[in-house]
Image (cartoon, rainbow, N blue to C red; front, side, top):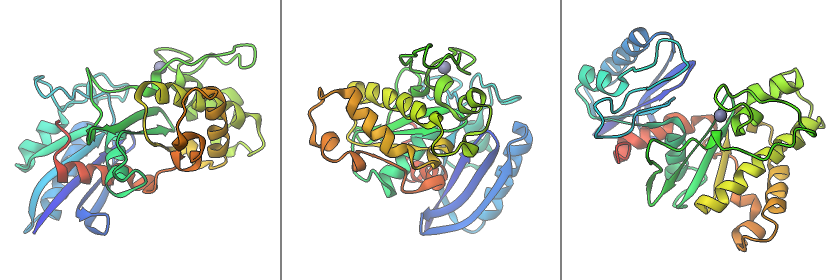
Length: 298
Ligand code: ZN
């Protein structure tokens, strides 16, 4: 029987597993993200051991970025210029493919999470849809025409620009490239710096959450108007505060101001904007789906 490998390659840890689907996970391990040679050696050793005696058909990687996903590029499947020390220009796909002699598919961590939700989670057969993660950073991916959304490079939905009323919110933002882009204003580190305490310690009645919900709803309004998604899934550490969801839904309807006439939004907003069904497992399960369906290179 065929089995598949999955790697959720994150900035602090790599989660690796061998399995078939969410109900059939055979082996799983986690390794700290230290330097590429050390972390990737641990990953290779894991798959050699976990897949011994099994028919490992392919491995999928949902990886932190930015990534080179152009199949015609000589550095296809590598991490490009990342602020993560030591990881710039790491050829993660070829390193694993050469060491394990197994086909490897790669995509962004958010596209992998989107694929998992599309395959097994809260967006099954919903096409197109958008998956946004709002945590240490903000990233967006999605499924369009049955495949993960790609482009010139890959979408960077966390860096779209939002209206920023500096009288109401004089905070400059934390993005090293743009200051007050979406990630600069609404990521976990932005919340921490603006309010002087981590997001998870801010009480539910703190004004931080209304402001946060407005920024997220502004971003969603842009995404609704550009991609016309049939559903939006919001995951990531900041979205662990579920009280954000009703505020975001309300603000989105307010910002769209009746212009988008869809019963999915106006009559079914609780389903239109929802948390991931797979929770924090979306990333690694998305990598499993990538391996299985070979969609990573399309
Ligand atoms: Zn930015």
